[in-house]
Image (cartoon, rainbow over all chains, first blue to last red; front, side, top):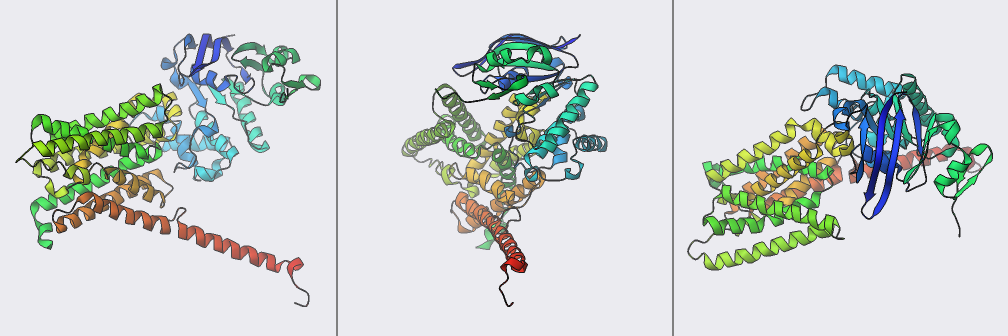
Length: 252
Length: 307
């Protein structure tokens, strides 16, 4: 299968702490991958570093065999919801339209066709009734869907999403997952930072177990085993039946 | 008393103070959403030593050169803040506080030296502290107007890009918008607005003209464009009225009057503002309270027997 993302020997740090070291990963085209690991394992940093939003210490990243700067339009990113100030005076449609700024061109104004595209994306995430709603008045799940719609209008080949299912209600989770599956059916590649070990097997066909470095990566049924989960979470985990796990605190 | 307002020079000064207020109102909105309101204050104070040193070098009060000196000094202040923050354990607000006071102290020290030694050429540099719009001559006004229009144009032309940059810079970068270019542009328009304002408003109070109109505007709208427009209006009107009052008073400093007028706009906005203004919030709460208590009153459980 074709490799759309190739990460070689990537390392990154925050001030004194090395958060990522020697990360080597190849992501296949059309895969839906969960990035799983404990808090502080460097999951978000991994995304930010390969997207050049955080400086890397060493290593190289190539997309479709090219550097990111050449293929920016093919790559979509859904940051964590908390990364922006939702009190910003704008509405949902406007935020989604931001995803089209690359296509609109700098210093140009959006046209009617762009507006329609943005509306269609809102429709897709079940938010068309909220197009003109102030973003501060949206619930957390609705805000997350607006972010997803903003990424969808980019019509990218490869998507990165940072915890899109964190703190959302069941309806939003279903809406988001059905869109991820649809993207997969269209042959798009999606990487998702995911925190809920219970749903990994249901939602994703590939898993990347990450804790500062890649512990294991591959098809979910092969890689998402008790043994691998334990080595990723360093023993702070209580395994339930069928290989599902809960993260628990160590008391000693 | 009113005749002074009809002279040609005063009218030009009034006009330029209005345009300055508009530019400051617009740039203030950028600072507001970059959450860097205090930065403008630090940079304004940091501009003072540059003004005095330039005066010492060229020996005359030519606003164009003084502005360049002020800009260099303010930028040095900006780099200093950046450097302290990134290479020491000192946080941004402390770094700004330090820069503000140290640069301003240095400026006042130099100013004292100049005033003692300049002899007959009473420099008039004192007016840079609280602002003296009436002291501007026609060439000063031209310099100021040209730069203010430049600032306004940059913000209007790239309004869509500014919006993206202020709301979600990481996403902007992902789309290929150069953050370093936007940062340079932001610093440029901020410093330009500050330095063209130091003659009319003064280094101490120019930051108020950047901060107050934008927070006042926030009380009236939930649209970014409207916020920019309102902030520009508040800034422009404050500039005009403040300058007019100080011109009537002859020799009164301009900065304080401009800021007091801007503050009046703020108080009105704070109380009557349609978005979370105090009065509206109170009325809405009362209405809810009333509706709620009536609802409970109708509930059979709460009705007294015999009623």
